[in-house]
Length: 135
Image (cartoon, rainbow, N blue to C red; front, side, top):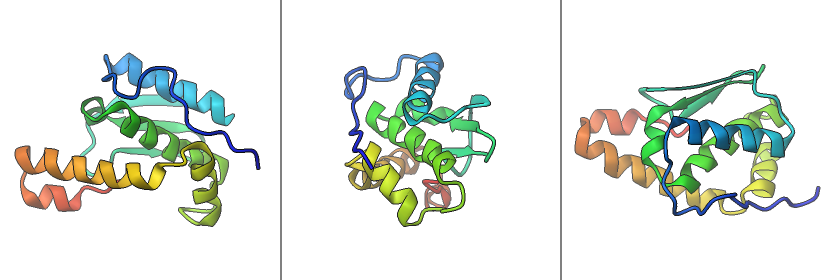
């Protein structure tokens, strides 16, 4: 497998401008991975950052607009990789694809968990924080 390391078109430090910016990133990554998005929705989600159906309906949590860009792109790529290997769950094949596209994904997954913990502890009950799943 050829390694296609993570490169963002814009600076990873640049915040999301708006929902269209987030949607653009999802479409960009879908094209890079060679998968088709049938529908792309951004809406508040209570317990997950995102979800994707086997036919390519991607739903992103509106709160991704508040996380650093690289973490939002990590969530997007994570979901899109499910379309590359739909039967592998989060197994070895899934992790190999994720590593090919995002070599730092393990660090970013931890960073996202920490961000969620810090953010939601301030605004939501502790129960909400502990029940929020990464994926």
